[in-house]
Image 1 (cartoon, helix red, strand yellow):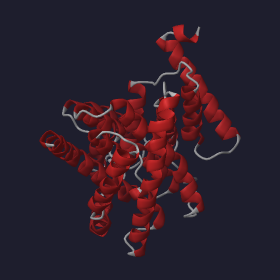
Image 2 (cartoon, helix red, strand yellow):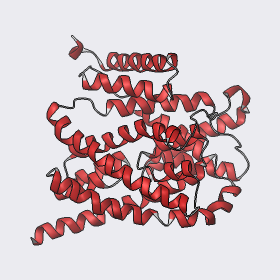
Image 3 (cartoon, helix red, strand yellow):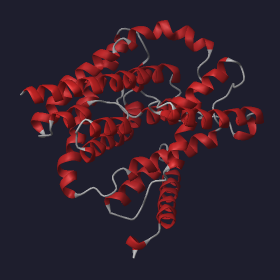
Image 4 (cartoon, helix red, strand yellow):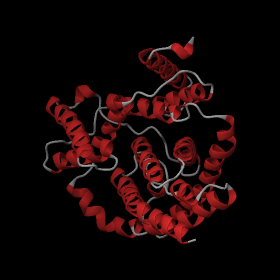
Length: 350
């Protein structure tokens, strides 16, 4: 019966499950109910092979809210802080190099993946970017999708626990003012920035267009003095809701064989990534290049959208966190095709 459900009916079921998860997490006073409630219920439904489905453009559009939130923090004061960030940002290339040196042999020799899949599985870029680039280079798209989805899932799940128990951070920072307290013209400008930035970014082939496009347009509005606020709290909560749904739905159709090999490899790899991130967090804080919470979020190899949410709810320096993540993602995306090409040439010569 379920298999014959129409697409609207499947989306309605997904929405109902996600809403139920949100309500239960809120009722139990669990952290981030609008993120973790939908994520947990959609994950369990996906593993149970329930006929759920993602929300397509709506989920992508929800990410524009986070792009606007980041762009609103780009002020002249942020540019004044860039020299202070330079030393810790300079550690990002070393961080990526160590990830590659550890991750590629890990997937290749321990789990038996081919060289291209091993490389793109190890690189902590955006989920969609690594899957697309890896597939084009000849890697296994299903393995890449599940490994990166596992990376994001585990890091998003563990990061709040680490933040609260290891660093004493609270997840109670106000995420934004209610919509009724933000001037109407600013709400309109933010909506325009989200749509124009997203669609123009896609048109020019900007990676992460749904976040980076709105961020760039909103940053321009912020620097010009036209926008002074983050998106309203209601919009941030909606972004969390659809982000959580998307993380859970990524595991739709996973088989037991994939759980035993691919997902298990992803979980084990997250442990290695966490150790590397912890080392760099300790280095940054030890050199007084950043505070512990900001440094942890800056080097945590999660998704840009997910780390943006955590930076907002912890009250971390959003500009500091996002500057590091953008540097990491840009370097990974620029370097990935070059390294993958070198791997292919080496295989042909061999």
